[in-house]
Length: 239
Image (tube, rainbow, N blue to C red; front, side, top):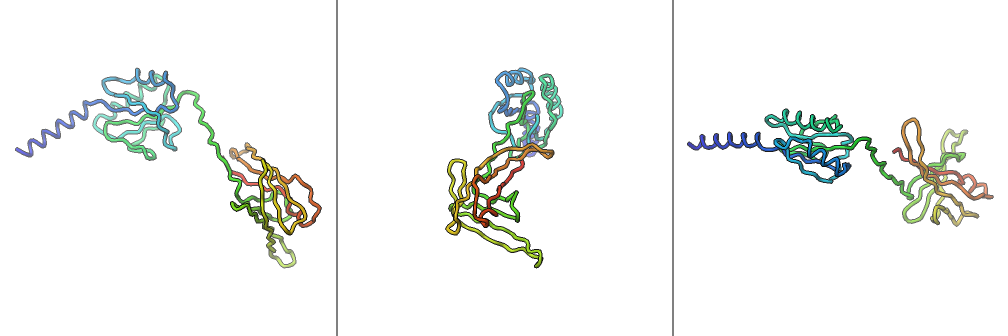
């Protein structure tokens, strides 16, 4: 008698699960109110119940996507929702099982991620920290400048000694100061202060775009040793 009760319960549960409406969780961050209203009207009310939120998309989702967990008759419901969305111009190019990033769904729940027509993703605003290591682009020797958080700096110069077949490392240290977009390097061993103007251009090239920070010298130096360090120092980030 007990087994029969359990079997009846399972049958009732399965029938209920198959007959209940599928909960569609629409991520509408990029959609207008009109877009949402059109989607709501297009979906079969006997099969779907729409829930709208403004949560951010998983990072890997860049086109119209549906995430679901397989269940009985899920093929029919997916076909229905895809057909309804196609009439509005949405093309679900990605239907994903179970999860994407940290987004996952239980049986009879769909995650729906849609972009409006002609949607252009915003370019992230990347910033390169001022405190960093920079490489010289126009020095006679291989030269690196490091600006540190305690306002000290280190310049390292690798001088190639042809007769010995090896590099000689020379190091220069001191303090740096930022005034607006100007960087000043001072050392007690130097006669003059080295001054640089900081610029942050972006460049388009064959492989994409790059964000570049350049420290361009803007002062003439009479000291021959300092003049060797009065170079353009740069660091770049591919976007």
